[in-house]
Length: 390
Image 1 (cartoon, rainbow, N blue to C red):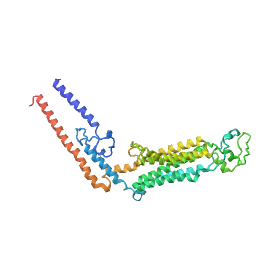
Image 2 (tube, helix red, strand yellow; image 1 turned 45 degrees about the horizontal axis):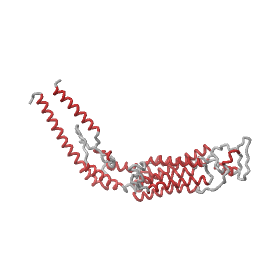
Image 3 (cartoon, one colour; image 1 turned 90 degrees about the vertical axis):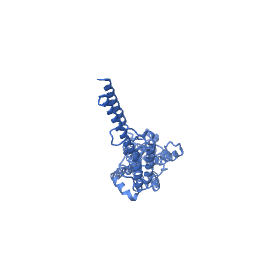
Image 4 (spheres, rainbow, N blue to C red; image 1 turned 30 degrees about the vertical axis):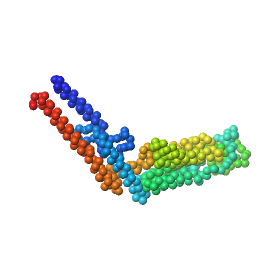
């Protein structure tokens, strides 16, 4: 093989290798609007469309136009999905989730009716179970109010501000799932463990006269319901409910105020920590009232906060995410609006700006085709000259 043909073969192979590397780096223009334009590493490279030969091109002006267009689209989309216009549709989409919620309520009622496991309690164990029988600092009836009703009121405040039915529906649904799943897990563990409360002695022997059977186990003569409640120490239900509801609210607020936007506004953390502090104080009150051991409170808080985090992430991005201020469903609808022709209120604006935005890549496509065809013609002329066909 002659040196000229060898050089021509190596050059052609090198050109194909370079071209394949370039093709692997392209993103389609249709994906441009859905990319994260806030991060420089995510900036797309626009390629010539429907051509065999491509070259990575970057248009700062086109990126600026698309970013402005996306911002205007989000402003137009906000307020276009209300409870009146889309509430029934959203609820029907999650019909099975609401059915599961009802099922969880039934299960939790059954768990509260059945008797817990009556664990052996001997005389030598009573030294840690003789704390005084006191009333609750935080009443039972108040727990659903501050852990469920209060977060829902805050959800409504944000709804009246943005008119986003997806945010309201998913906030309420996620909160109810968080609280009810926590309640079922907590009550199931209570019934299975049957740990005596710190005030069990006075529940079992209200007159102070303790009686034991031949195996050394207690023979309680107190109220049946009081004794049954005395075997439900682990884990703390008040604490679990508090952290499941207020923990979910804390995550919700951290996303709404953008607490982790790297802006250095530490004051936002006060808003995030306040619900958690309230839940912690509820847990401390359970130890102060001698209704729970500290291990019960710790386990209840851990269960509630863990379930709240899982339920929140089912509907919302993490609070530190750039889109953590809204639910997944909102951004999904926004993306579909961008792909299918934008939202109705801004359709004319979108069509005009998209047409302008697509002019530049099409013009560069025609220019690139011209360069490619000229290069092919030049290469053919050289081959003819070398072959002696000039």
